[in-house]
Length: 63
Image (cartoon, rainbow, N blue to C red; front, side, top):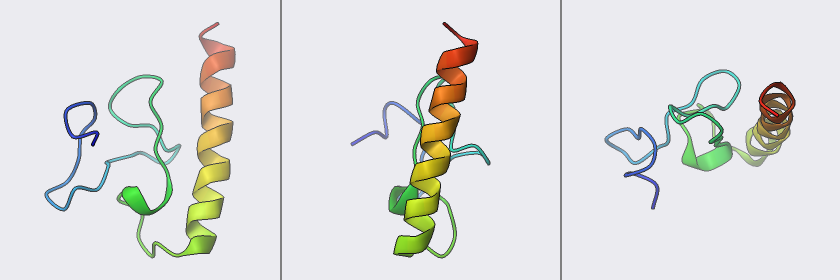
């Protein structure tokens, strides 16, 4: 769905950095659709929280 918007792997996983940022400024991804290893529900929940905080930080810095 997002392969034309952000960088994805050959397996279709969205590439992110440590703060869940994609290669597009202001676009974040988390959980099972990303390159994060051990995609279990605990990881997905933690990544969701991290992405939310990173998005908040982005908005605060770019508003």
